[in-house]
Image 1: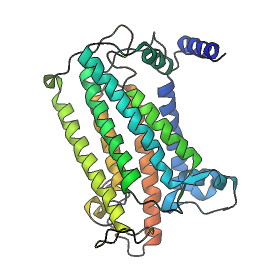
Image 2 (image 1 turned 90 degrees about the horizontal axis):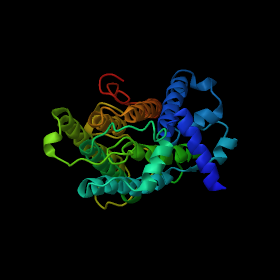
Image 3 (image 1 turned 180 degrees about the vertical axis):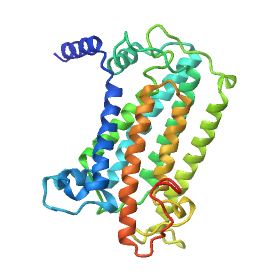
Image 4 (image 1 turned 45 degrees about the vertical axis):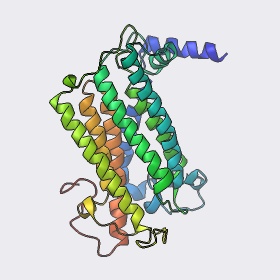
Length: 323
């Protein structure tokens, strides 16, 4: 029965050229832009469910504590779960890309069939990403997933009171599921009748080297920013946790914006987009990530100003000097 259902879905996708990953990130982008704009401009007029979906952690919406939305909340510490998933998923993708280049072999048939299914059908899937670009981009995404896995499972200190909406928890999985697949869906060796090309440093362009530098800078600075958060809750002498309260962060880019970690997140995805200039899917991912980070940063900035009387007036929400 399942096989028949899969075949029917596959035929439907082939007939109508439905690109499931593009549809996913286009939907995410439209929702975050539309509802995010409403949250920033007319939040008080929105239903509690929508407000609770966008607000979590320190800027959680506290209206109607007995609403159905509260029953659909999970601990914020569950963020660690989808980084465990992203850790394994990204390593699998990197392994397949690296193996294909070393062995000069195409991806396993099951992988190609699955990519055909979620990438618009075998007749529509074209090679847009060269092996060189895919290996670099997949390595960068894998490094980010590994670091976030380590941070959320072994370093970050989550408040036991903080919750996130179940929808945010599910979106976290879908984001990493689709993002990793976006690195493969139009890549040499993963498209029918294509084979991986040989890796060469000579093939890396100046723009791609600049993107690598941008990624490295943003990646390392996001780590430093997250450590500032961690150290706010630790005793500087003993290293033991002394508080789960949200304190005023200082140092680094915090002197200019309220959410530098979100700013660096955007820059990392933009850097990978520069390495994969032909990928429409990655452009949609950047739109989604940028919209999501900006909305969250604006809500966080508002919370800081409401809860700290002497909050620095020169700090912007997420982009230095601009926003």
